Image 1: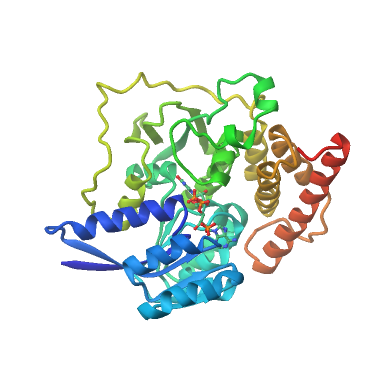
Image 2: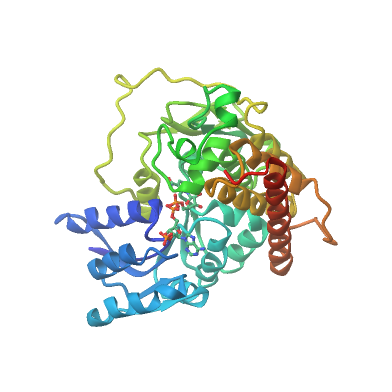
Length: 400
Ligand SMILES: NC(=O)c1ccc[n+]([C@@H]2O[C@H](COP(=O)([O-])OP(=O)(O)OC[C@H]3O[C@@H](n4cnc5c(N)ncnc54)[C@H](OP(=O)(O)O)[C@@H]3O)[C@@H](O)[C@H]2O)c1
């Protein structure tokens, strides 16, 4: 029997919980030829779920970002002999604990440094956190190469491409997109969409931030940038197709006219388990795809008038350098402001575009491979985005 060790950064989130569900299922199977041992787990402030996971799996180390939750965590875990810590340093410590693989499932830019820590010790990274690559793709991929860390894409589209990619003779990649909850909505509905409506994805169950990104279609823009870094393809060779059924997860087009697609039910346990077992596969209880019973598969061109985020992200991808660092930071601030009802749904993309059109004092926008520059850029974009949020609130005179 093969014992694999794994740590989960962002264990209490949607991807974290799906990963834990797989570990639980596989470890219970008497005849499984692989078992997983959880070495370290982290969360932001969901101390209750973190404690439950820790007591069930007895990892070596548990970290919580919110320092105010430390005493609660410590008093719950001490009787079980489980070590724990709090704050940013503790997240880095969790990522440093020796393990074969690390599930990088913290949402947003906050996931960058802990993931880099795991990269630096040459761990295999199961990369769910797309913001790492959007904001610091050159830096991240350089670090991975320097430390011989393997990066396995968890995002279902990139995982699909990874499964069917033969690096030679590729003409282009096609990322599919469900279109999110508002694809068929009128501009008026989109204009006034609430956080609850935006978070109600038709096909996938996900965390709040990625759900809003899917609704604006910024998610597909972030994925476009993610794909450029993962597969070393220029943005001009990556197309996006709306596929509302979310059955074809993405495609690779070859120079002889062949198109290879990966299909499956929309269940993140499929790409997660693929990465956990790579290069093997494991038998897990995901719903099986029955094409005979499936709805008709549709493929449509995206509407960038209705969903400007896609155009804005593609422009940033083509511009390269720090443009996508600005894009990511502005988007994180705008999405949070929307979730806190400070701005309207349509203002998310508008604020990101305003930030990208602003003047910044960066001496170089050539390559986003300098960590200090990335941090400065991220910080400046966040401050600028907050200014635009405040301006828009003043214009409308209300906190919605
Ligand atoms: N969900 C999906 O189906 C899916 C698919 C593809 C890619 N992804 C990507 O995977 C990542 C995670 O997505 P998700 O849907 O799982 O998100 P989620 O449900 O919101 O979970 C996020 C996780 O990160 C933790 N976290 C949040 N902010 C943090 C901070 N500042 N410092 C440390 N930890 C923090 C959360 O802890 P608390 O629980 O304590 O808040 C939670 O464990 C995102 O980058 C997303 O784009 C997700």
